[in-house]
Every structure is written in C-alpha cells, then in structure tokens.
Image (cartoon, rainbow, N blue to C red; front, side, top):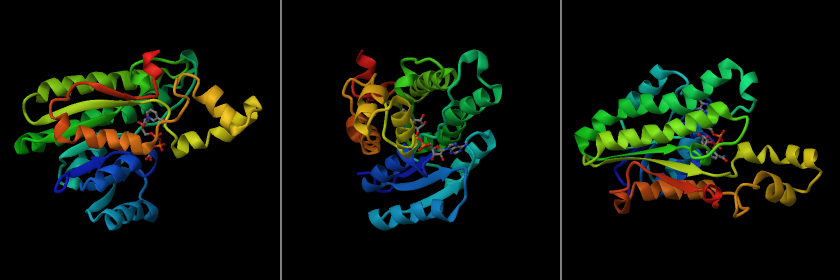
Length: 256
Ligand code: NAD
C-alpha cells in the first residue's frame, strides 16, 4: 500500500518508534530510522528491516533536542512523504522541584522537534500534493497526572500543533494527526516492572493490573504493533479526510 513512499520516524531505535517503522515497512514504505546515537547496532536495525520487508531502510543519527539537527535529518533523508514525530523522554518531579534543564529538554525533544521537522518536511509534501504527519502524543496530551508537568505540557501542545498544521495543509493532500497512546509495553515500561513489584510487594501480573494500569480500564497494555497499525491506517486512503484530530489507543483511559 505504501510502496514508493519514504517515511521518517524520529526516535525509532527502540519502543514505539521502532514498532511504527516495522509496520510502515511491512506496508511497503521505505523507512528512515533515527536517534541521537550512532552505533553499529542502530544501523543494523535498518538493515534488518530492509532485509525482512524488501524496502530501503536507513538510520540517520540526529539529536532531536537541537533544531538544526531536526532540520538536517529531513534534508539528509531527501525529504519524506510520511513524517512520524515520535522521539520523547519523561521526567517526574513536583512542579516546584522540577529541574529547569529537564523542563527545557522535554519541551525541546517532545514538542519543538516536531515543529522543526514539520517545517522542514512540508514544502516537498506540498510540491508532491501528498503527505502524512503523525505525531505520537499520549493520553497525557488529553488529560493530566501529577508530577509530569513538562511532559503533559509538551504533549498537550503537540495536539495543538497537530490541529494547526492540519488547518494550514487542509485540501492539499496532506493530513496531520496525533495518536494518543495509553500505557504501551515498551522496553522503557518493561524496565519499571521489577521496581514496582519490589515497592508494592506484588507479583508481575498484580502490579501491572493494580498499579501500572490503574487508569487504563482495559487493564491491558497497548502494543507497539497497535500504534504502528494506527499509523498505517492514517497513511491509508481510508484516512484521506482524517486530519486535525487525535486517535486514542488507551484501553479506555480518556473515556473515564
Ligand atoms: P523509548 O524510550 O523506547 O523511545 C524513545 C525514543 O526516542 C528512543 O528511540 C530514543 O532513542 C529516542 N530519543 C530520545 N531522546 C532523543 C533525542 N534527543 N534525539 C533523538 N531521539 C531521541 O520510549 P517509548 O515508550 O517508545 O516512547 C516513544 C514515544 O511514545 C514518546 O514520545 C513517548 O512520550 C510516547 N508515549 C509512550 C507511551 C508508553 O507507555 N510507552 C505512552 C504514550 C506516549
């Protein structure tokens, strides 16, 4: 379905970004993976995707906390038809103790990078009359939790940015939407489970159900494949008129 389309996925050497790249490649897209590291194993991820799906895949190192790097990523890739803004980090502290450098870093990586990549990618999308911008926001783009002020401010702003870009590109063959995942079982989340088991004195299944997924009514994690599949849907003809909106993949979290 996406044969001949080039997708750039920021922050895609693990977790959701890699899962999205996998599903886009499975759908036939050429993919560009990214993170800030430049290790042999990063490039091996791209080679593996290319070999398994018969697509072209590259890994380009670029630091999404730096505006110039964000724009250089788009340029080095030769532009893109599909842009997935996924790079993100988290830090947890009460607002009055929140370190300023952490605030700045979260806003830069989780929000400002999407401004730079979008601005850099749009002219070529307009010239071709087709483009898909998918921003990986969060249930925390629609609702809040304590101690995550920077993350939640950034994710709400990503939803606002998505709506604005949708309006500026409406009727031009370009759509811009935000996917809002609830808890997704990525290596990042998996790594928290042993600590949570210890802190709460619970077994794995209980700590997942009663602590980690307390706000997710399905009491099941979303998967990276589901976020990837939602991205592929947004790139399909069925979604040609889906723009400026959010799609929650959160087991009912935001219905509460
Ligand atoms: P992850 O840590 O596995 O992935 C984050 C990715 O961003 C990694 O590839 C990392 O290398 C990259 N990254 C970090 N800093 C970067 C930088 N400066 N430049 C370039 N790349 C950088 O975590 P994840 O859970 O897969 O998160 C991916 C996205 O999904 C994030 O935006 C996150 O906020 C969002 N999200 C995750 C969940 C969840 O439960 N896992 C839920 C909702 C939203």
